[in-house]
Length: 307
Ligand SMILES: N[C@@H](CCC(=O)N[C@@H](CS)C(=O)NCC(=O)O)C(=O)O
Image (cartoon, rainbow, N blue to C red; front, side, top):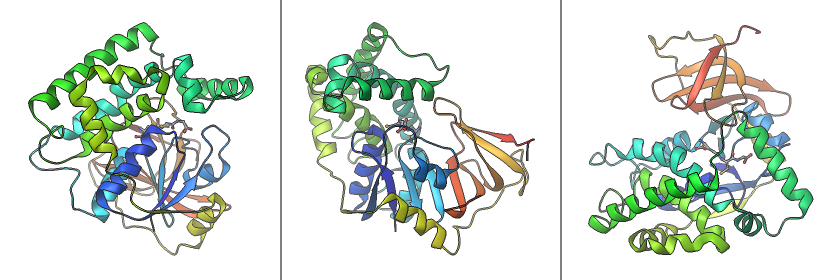
């Protein structure tokens, strides 16, 4: 059972929903709060608060780069990683970082925020802004003039790529890069008063419509407390191992944190490490013993000297 913890307006959640649609995988849908506190999410992750999170029993997968790999392992065809497109992964990383920040800057102009949050009250707006400022920490925020220039340059490049090639970013079929670029532009589309920007890029707009037509496959709702109970009732974990020569030993007390925003550390015992992912085992009063998995890229592992 694939359980996705997400909320509707989350772009990174949309990336995963579309990948589930691409692979035709059925899933359980747990709606989580868009701002802290998120007690049921934290029971599962041990501190990671970003959206989305994928749960399979007592295995918890953080970050869409790793979630995409899990979906690929579950359902290898159609592939997200065609051998003919080795640059699709770094392009996806660029989109999830650089393009996403420029897209958010544009979409979160006052008119865009109102559309995305559904005409929020001043209290809701203030709560959202305070939550995101805390999540960003010291990571600087793009100003609208800076973000607009950058976004237009990125959109022009993507539009030209699609106009010369296509119908997808790397040719005949969608791959991981299409989903990473797509969720950023989906977010702009949701910010309806400022979404007109996209119409300046016709090949890109046509491609976005094709991508979103993939849909989300079939899902059924699950309560977040029931998802925690699923973890507690699980009898084992997916097999992982700590590969030698990567700087850490199995059984070591470590903490793992994102190297960008939302860098809340997750502390536990190191049980898995490869060039692709890192896994810590931790215990929670409600969720039981969970394995929390992160991509290796974009995360920092530290020896936990307090343990
Ligand atoms: N690198 C992460 C980024 C995830 C991310 O930034 N998600 C946003 C929502 S789209 C978030 O966590 N916002 C704050 C929250 O949901 O609490 C990934 O690929 O999953």
